[in-house]
Image 1 (cartoon, rainbow, N blue to C red):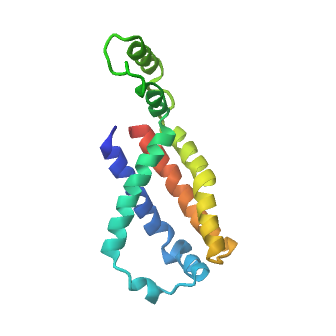
Image 2: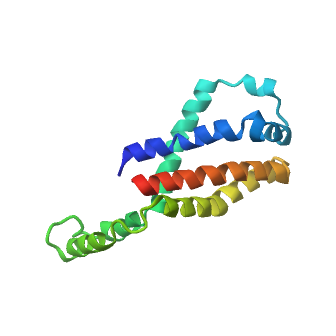
Length: 164
C-alpha cells in the first residue's frame, strides 16, 4: 500500500472542485440549479469544509484503490486461508506464483481511469440522482455533479492504480 498515493489522490476532489465549481466554469450554473447564492455559500467555515472533505476523500481513495487494483482481490481470495502467509505452504506458494506472474498487470493510469469512470456511472450517478430526486432537483443539477464526479473519480482511479 502506497499511502502517499492515497493521500495524493485525496487531493484530487478538492483541486477539481476548486476548478470545476468556479463561477467561470460550472459554479454559477450549479448555484442556480441548487438554489444557492454566493452570500449563502460565503457563510460556510471553509477550514472545516475542506478538512472534512479531505478526510472523506482519503476514504474514497482507499475505496477506489480496491476497485482499480485487481491484485487486492487476489490477496482477498487467499488471505482467509489458514496457510496464507506461512512460508513454504501450498497456498502461500500459489499466491506468490500468481503475484509473480500477474502482480503488475493492469497497473496503469489508463486502467485506473476506466475503473474510475465505471465507478462513477455505477455508484456515484445513482447516489447523486437519488439524492437529487428527493431534494426535488432537476436534471441540470444531476448533470453538473455527475460531470464533476466523472472527472474526479477518473483521475483518482488513475492515480491510485498507477502509483499504489
